Length: 133
Length: 401
Image (cartoon, rainbow over all chains, first blue to last red; front, side, top):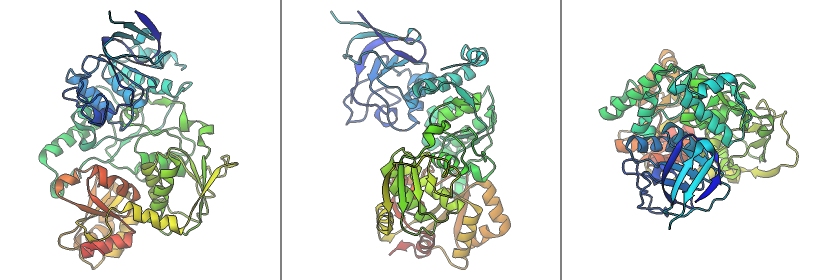
C-alpha cells in the first residue's frame, strides 16, 4: 500500500480500479454518456469503460459542455467513482462537483498503473493505492 | 483561498444544496487559478442555453437548480430557435419542447430572457472597472476591451454558479497585471466595415492564442466594427481582452514596452478573407447576417441595401438579432422592407446554434468571421465570407460568382 498527497478539487471519497490515460480527455466527444465507454477511436483508451473506475489523466480539453456529459454519466450510473488529474481545469472540475464525483489533482508523483485498487480521499487530500499481489 | 464566515456557512450547506454546489464550483475554479478570494460581481451573462449545445444532461442540471434564484442581474445567450417563429424556421416540435424546458428553468431562476449574444446592446451594460462574470466569448471580449469591465471567459455552469452566489474568483482578467498586452499589432491597411474588422480578428486570434493584442494604426472603429472584431478574436483564438490605441478605454493605461510586433497589411487582409471561405463560387442557399446579433444600425443598413430588390427563389436571407432590436426594426419600417424583399428577421437564436444542418442547408454566406470559423464544424456547412454588400448581392443572385 502507498499513499500519495494531492489537492482536493471536488469533495468526497471514491474507490475503484484504476484506468490511466496519458493524454487529455474531452468528455464531449471522447466519452459516450449512455454507456461510459471511450468512443473516440484516436484515443488510447478507445473501447474501454470508465464506469465505477478511478479515472486518471493529465488534464481536460474541449468544450465546457463536457461538464454536462459527466453529469449525464452520473445520472446513467456510468460515471467514474473518482478522478485523479495532474492539473485540474474548470470543465472537469465543474462536471465532477455537480455529479458528486471526488476529484483531486497535483498528486506528489504522477505515476499510476492500470488495474490497481485505488481509494481517492479528497477530503483528506490523499490517494491510497493497494498494489497487486 | 480565503473565505468569509458567510461563505464558509454556504459551503457547509446551511443555505441549501443548490447554493452549496454553486459555491463549491466557484471555490474549485478559484483554487485551480490561485485566486486569493472571491469578489462580488454586478452582472452575469450565461452561455449554453441552446438545446443543441447542452442536450438532455444540461436541461436536467439547470432544472435541478430552480429551488433558488439568481442573486445578480443575469441575461442569457441565444437559444436554438426563434421562440415565436420556430416553426417557420423548420425547427422540429421535439426540439422546440426541449428548448422551452430550458427557457422555463431560466425564467424560474430569475434570468432576463434576452436570448442574445449582445447583452451590452440591450440593457446589461457594465461600467468601466466593474467586475462581472460573463460567458459568451464575443461578449466577454467586448465587455473587457470596449467597456473596460472585468471578466474571465466563464463557462456555462460557472456563470450559472456566479449568478446564484453573486461572486467570482479574484484571478485572471480581474487583476490589473493580467490586463497588459502580450503582442503589438501594426495595422497598415484601412479597415472599412464589420467584415474587415472580422478578418483582422480572425488573423490575430490565430496568432495570439489567449494573449492580449494591442492594436495601433486603427483610426476609427464603430461599435458594430468592435463587436465584429471582438467576436472574431474570441473565436479564432481564445482572446478575452484587446486594446486599440486611443480608441479603447485602457489603451493608454497599460504597459506596452518591449512587446513582440506583427504587421497586418492589405495582403493579410485579403488572405484572411480567402481562408475564411470554404468555397469561392456556386450556389448559396442561405445568407446569414447577425453574428453577433445585429444592432439596429446594421438592420437599417441591410434594409437600405435590399430595398426594392428580391431574394432569389432557392435562397434565404436570415437576419439574427435580439428581440428589442427586432421590435425597433418593426417600428422603424426596416422589417417590412426586408420582408417585402423576401428576407426574414429572427430573434433569440443564431446561425451557429440553431440546428441548421438538419434543415437541409448546404452553403452559407456570412459577413461574420466568427460564423465563418464555426459554420464548417458546428453547422457542417460550406461558407462564403464576404462583406455586407456582397452578402446582399449573393442573396439576390442565389449564388456567388
